[in-house]
Image (cartoon, rainbow, N blue to C red):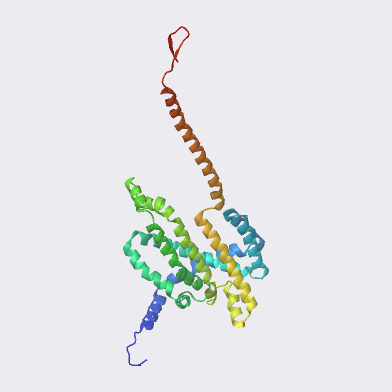
Length: 330
C-alpha cells in the first residue's frame, strides 16, 4: 500500500489510553488482582486439598442425586480416568479457574441482562459491546490483561470473564423479554411493584433461558483454559502447550481428554439444575396422574347422582286395577 496514504493511528491511541489507565488506576487493578487471586486460591484449596477419592465420591453422589445413578457412575468413572492419567492436579486447577471465572461472569452478566431487558436504551448500548466481545479473538484479551494485572492466574481469569460473559447477558435479556405480557399485566393489575414482578414473575418464568446462559458461560470459561495457560494460569492448558511444543501426541490426548470429561460433567450438571431434578419430576408425574384420575371419578360420580335422582323423581305414577275393581296408584 502507498506510504503516503492516510493511516489512522488507532493503535497509538489505544496504547496511550492503556498507559494512562496503568499510571492512574493501578491501585484499582491491584485490588482486583488481590480479590480475584484470593477467590482462586480458595477454590483451588477446596478442590486440591482433599484426597482425589473424596472429591470423586462427593461429585459422584451429587450427580447421582441430581441426574440419576447412571450419570453418577459415569462421573465417577470419568474422574477416575483423569486421576489414572496423572492429570488430577491440573484438572482441579482448571476446575477452580473455571468456577471462579464463571461465577464472576454470571454475577456481571445476569444483572446486565435484567437491566437491558427493562430498558431499550441500555439494550441498544450493550449489544455493540457484546458483539465486540464475542468477535474479538481471545488472544487479544491477554495483552491488556498482562499489562494491567501482570503474569499469573489473574490475567487468565480476566480474559476468561470478558470472553464468556456475552451469552449470559443475551440469554437473560431474551428470557425476561420472552415472558408473556399478559402475566406481567396481571401482576400489575393486582398492585405488585416492579421489583416484585421481576422477582416473582419474570425471573421464575425466564429461568430456563437464564440457566442456558449460565451453561454457556461455564462452557466458554472452560474453553479458555489453554489460552489462559499462555499467561501463567495453572491447569490442563500447561500440558497441552507442552505437548504442542514437543509434538507429544500422548500427553496432548491425555490432557485434552481430561478437559472433555470436565466439560461433560459441568454441562450436564448445569443443565439439570436449570430443568429441575429428574427424580422429582418422575415422582410427581404418577402422583399427578393418580390425582387427576381420582378427581375425574369423583366428578363423574357427582354428576351421575343428581341425574339419576331427577330421573327417579320425574317418573310418572303407575295406576293398576285392584281385585275389587278400584284403581290404586303405585
